[in-house]
Image 1 (tube, each protein chain N blue to C red):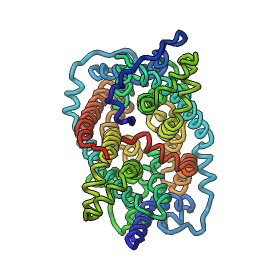
Image 2: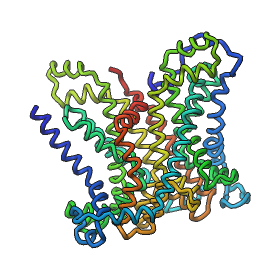
Image 3: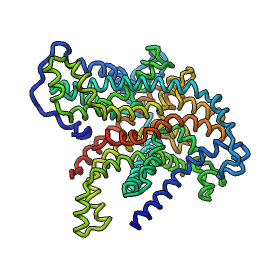
Length: 270
Length: 303
């Protein structure tokens, strides 16, 4: 018992130390420039919210939140539809073709996207999709499909086959069997797929920087990057922008933390 | 069968379901395959081809130059240095992130009252954009002895401005952000260790350390495999944090393969050379992944 108590004290101390960067972020965002230079480590006294109002308009976060939301939501729908659909075939069909296709998808997990980055940039330009939501949605759907197919296939293989077979004997085609019977059974892994892909897409920076930079369709990380570059020396303003930029995803995480943490680990358990 | 064991096992042969006349089954995979081929496969194959050309990124004007890009790479001090940096950074991140992640998991796994809260705190940075984390740490690492980390610890270190320290500072930032990720995967692994085994070991007189060494550790092997692979691949491809915090500086002290290939393409317009650097990166990732799969899966045992 005493050992547990000691461990609890130690772990809380570790958590407090771990939170130092977060304390720095929030306290600086509530200070005026004089406080930041004179008492950088102290609590804000008095706290001011001026940085937040200035940052909100200067960083153009309103439109970026809309862009990020549209791109993330549509990409997730496409990934779940295409990924679960393909996995149903890959997990069920025992032909060389099915197995070969599965290996081909797995290859995409290991390939660093940098290898195809430049040819893809050219392709997206030729298709006229640079600086559009559609270009980003196509990119994320393609780049995250291998991982999505991998998670779905593993899960479907572990399901009893009888469900789909039973539906087919009742005269349903493959398509009906999948949408009515199989897909609802995939809910746990769909949750994992949703969370892992949402975190990746929402926070991705490199591709939207190159594809959307200067288009007026920037996502949140790209807007924050440009904003920080512009006001680099005004730490209070910059940190207020960072707080605002991180707030949506952190709020969603805190609201759904049990599912998020479970999602991150369950799809990846060996 | 779990996703990670599924990749090797060919499904058992059983009677095929009756072919239905409505949908040929391969049509299920066709839409996904089309998008995947367009966005990943075709560009990756083109990338391999471009690596042997002098393409400038503008127009159709390019010619094959054989291995010239790779010869340039061998003589390019900055690019060669970035290979060393990438490997050092990956090694540091993998070792520290997983070490810290395991300690956190063991601490949080005990019967603590604050267990749920601690888990949320340590995991929270994982969901924040790495670019934003890098900007926050850029200030925490500022050289002012009164502010940030120096102010907290009473030091006078120029964390990002001193070439001999900067790479390790980047590693520290990455570890802070992702230690919670490793922790969560280790926690999932710890849940799979049966209590009976620990009790049996206790009855046999095993101490805390012995129980960890002979009961917990072998059963954690799958979690170790996943953590090592994810953090290694992540480390080799690291870009956002370096780009936002130091942009490869001071000098070339924190240049990684990813930042070099970015600059070669989008700053200098050497698209052919940039894809050659990307090909080297791809080979590193592929080689490390294969070696890890081969070695680590061999030591996995089941309870």
